[in-house]
Image (tube, rainbow, N blue to C red; front, side, top):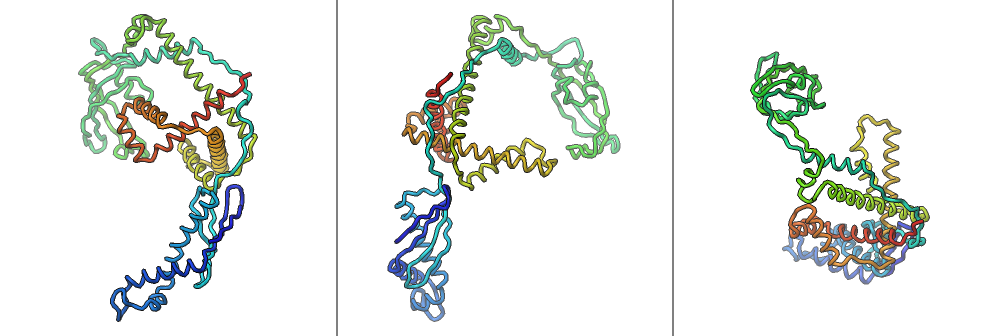
Amino acid sequence: MKSTIKTISSTKKEIELEIEAEEVSRELEKTVARYSSRVKLNGFRIGKAPKDLVKRMFYPEIQNSLVDSLAPKALSESLKTHNINPITIPVIGDLHFEEGQPLHFKASFEVWPEFDLPGYRKIRLKKKNVRVEEKEIDQALEELRQKSAEYVPVEGRGVVAGDYVVAELQGKDMKTKKLFPSEKVVILAGHAENEKILNESLIGLKVNEERSFVLSYNQDHENKKLAGKEIEYRLKVISIKEKKIPEINDEFAKHLGEYEDLRSLKDKIRNELTASKEDSLKKEMAEEIIKKISDALSIELPEIFVEQESRTLLKSLLSSTPHQDLKKEQSEALKAEAKNQAEENLKKHLILKKISENEGWEITEEEMDEALNAIAKANNIPLAKLIEDMNKEGRRETLRNNLLFKKTVDFLVKNAIIE
């Protein structure tokens, strides 16, 4: 077998192969024999038809079978010999087959580009300080306070805004006089998303009191059963609960179970906020380092992967945009944004991959076990179930790559020069 590699671009290659006539002839004989052993022709028992007759009658099928048998094997051996790892399935074309002659064909495919990295060990960055403001601690305390709220039954008064009300609600079609099924609902009195008339009707009602009101629905209402109808509702209050929010003091801190007083709670919040900000700053520094490396490189990217990543990103962009109202120029701008981001993502991936290869890093099984244990604990699922699911879904290698890239990012930040 002879093979020649042709470089079309840094991401595209073509290989031309020639399989010797003797090899082709041997495979042709095997293929004809295989067909002869299983075809049935009039006047002959299965496997007893003359090979020449079988060959003549099924020549196109035999030729295709011959190529399918020889070409993939020859291509695989040639790629291995030239130490080439295609990232797309090779496309075979320009095939020439004539009996008694060598088999010629070409195969085209894409590869990851080869490139040399600039210096990445001592990249200079401006120093940024992490600072936690008192208002951030106050905000975190308020969030804890709201989460610790209790809802206690109300006695001796009617509903006020902010109460949680369990009510019985039944509607009646004003035109047909048909009653809808009665249902129990929980309503946050005065909530902005409630119908205005519902809030007005609810305020002031006591337990076991009821009130009626009428709602007119638009023709395009999302509930087709209500669209275009005028419904009279009967609203009866079953129970009222009031939101009680604790004061922020030492007792509140002790009630959370881990703290001696309010000061120790604030210290814990400050430490957590500091750690979170430091982690965010580390990510910002990593992005800045990778961008500096990326800006110093000109890398041609495989088109197929740019297209795939662009489609994924565009779908994400459109999911947060009412695209039915998009103008042509807006749609084109989103496509361009998705493509630019796709190219940046792929370039970043290649840079991190190249650095990890340069440094000779690998993720050990101990590191994998540690990561799997952390994921299982964070998601409150059994470790064995997590491992089973990851193996079944083919996500284990993705986790390994993510850990390798994290190690690379940590290395870049650690070796940066902070000025």
